[in-house]
Image (cartoon, rainbow, N blue to C red; front, side, top):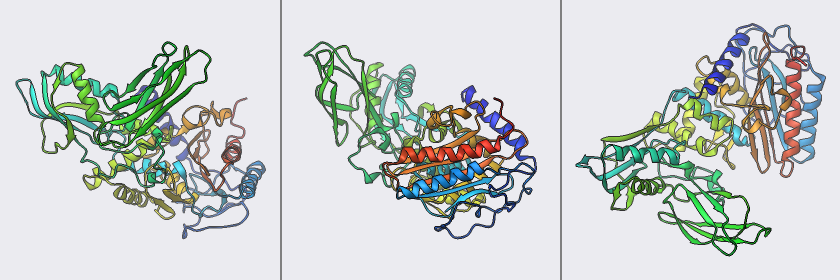
Length: 523
């Protein structure tokens, strides 16, 4: 794990231990002193913004510091008014973590599409059921005799981070171990089920962008292919670099046009049984910069094996046969590659909102806890069990996939805040859970938001965006002696208004942060 990530976890743990250990906290923006009531059935709750129910607290009652902000109330009212004027819906809940007291609420039990805020549930289950030290193993298996392997098996366990450079290292290691000939390459994809397209991804079958990549136990480069186009001389074909190698069949070409000609590059993919068929067209002007385009594969089963065959040949290992599925019977491990710890990989979910990582880790939870093959259905059940074990309750949470992409999930602000509070108060979970979130004004999907708070690094949250959904859920970490705030804001049915909805959400969260840090921020 990089030093920077370890340092982040350590700092978060120190902050949490110094604030949550103190009794007290914040109070509702309407000036009340109520603690939260028990959770009731999920469903719409209409009314003006104000205090509402949240998880029952067993910690100390609210202390002397009051989050009593007319500005926060005004921003909440503006948020709800604007979203309704745009024809949408919005649900909001913010609580004091230590006491459980509700600070602000509106339709907090309504069910919304949380978009990528669904990744919070996947992350919590992964940390609790797999642990932050969990590592993936990708191996080459087979029986070697006199420098030959009759059947070389590439077996994956779902590593979402396996990259071209890793497979090159494995190919070189096999060559260094004395292997000179391989008769056939098999890839064992049995750790996951054969449903390679995650639930709800079928809603956009013609989308070839990398964010919609399928999932497999043995995947490479997140099951996407990177095409880098570089111009040559006018009239000549442009050069095309493809990563990973050996996985495509190219047809057509991109022509180099005269300097100053508009760029028009066509990369069209078509489904195929094994290697991906790519149709190239268009032009790139002489002297222009290289253009890189990533496209998902349609069938992930043999991609890594095709790349491995090409790499083995490049390092001097003769491969005479084709690649195929199978090899489950091979047990002798020849070469192993282990991923970084799960606690580090989860930053791809919280900070970067990577759908491929989320869906792969989702199925890993199922494979590890229920046995292979891992399925999305079993993973969703295990997420529910995790919520109950944390005392967060599964009520108000419905998941079909692990990323929240497309129309695959429903959650209430209350359910998300229940999870946020339970995770933060869990000594085994809190620091790692917070560390994987984006930091306002600093990194990930929040790099360009909350820039005024980059110094304090106080706003830690998960973003969510779809065509008509804008969501933000997370924490406002406090100065010494005060309690964190957990919040969830879910806005839906606002097509064409994502940017203004996001700005309204940010204004509300910033108003809460201003009050929590009142008198504690340096100029």
